Image 1 (cartoon, rainbow, N blue to C red):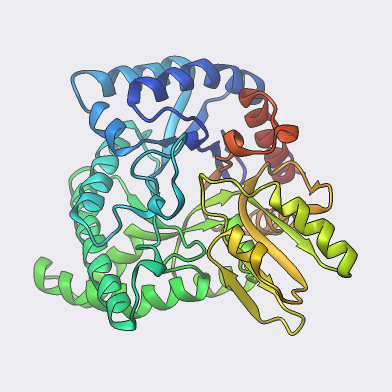
Image 2 (image 1 turned 135 degrees about the horizontal axis):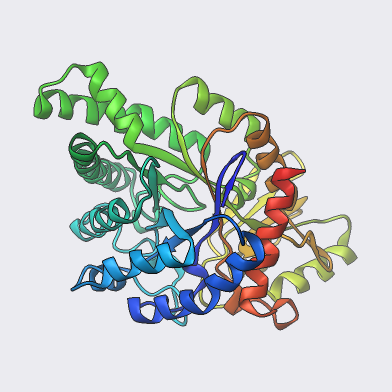
Length: 400
């Protein structure tokens, strides 16, 4: 839906269907009711997530035109897509494989270009479109500094292949499309600092030299092309887990003219440890969220404000230290502030949306809570109702 601060939607990675038939069936069952509740008179956006298989299937026959007509008939539109998970995302063990195939591979390039082909067809006239994606790869797959540097260089080269395609689309159709890189814990890019440094020291340097030669254009023009077509996906959950200073990060991005393509509105788990008795009770609560499907990285803040990073919740639970606070990568409902002895990083969402209200830094906003299937039973409510509650809370936060 269109608000004063931009377009707001929810990500359909909340639905478990991996084939296009299954995914579309779930979308048809829920989206009309969600729209009727939230935006009965105006059109409402869909944050589309397609697996690799679904992205192939939707381009077969007249499937895409039929979906486009369904959107028109129901008052929906697609302006953003989630291209991070390539394969199965529900009812399978995902863990670090959410990054596979990563940006060092041709499969990731082909998949992403295919998604942009789909988005260019669905995007309403006059709008820009974005697709969020993996932060290059999973850091722990590379066991030396040299291997990590090589992977970063190769991934950057492949991202520039996508930029070349997006520039060609812009030249042909006038439509602006951008790839939105999504830092997350244990990605090659996991913080705002790492994203900005990579953008300036790797992407711009490699890309400017490449496009100067390949397109026969001045360096300044090449730089503008890259900045237009590669943006940051600001996932509030991921930045909150790292205790990042939202205002400072966004200020630096603006000063460097690096665009934010999308805010992913999401919340993580957190808790502070006041004493030993309190700590044991809190750890017992965290154990309830220790499920085997997704990675739940934990970043512990020590009393001196140094950070200790754990690749998953079991490693954190097994550690012995005097942490002052934990933040865990478990996407919890954004409308809930506390979970017994645990809290959410909802205040980070309020802060980021407050900055968006003061001075909008993107036109794309997407609620992303994909963990309904693995939430503790006490937190589960019907899926459509859950989506509506999330969207209503965000809409109210943005319009108060």
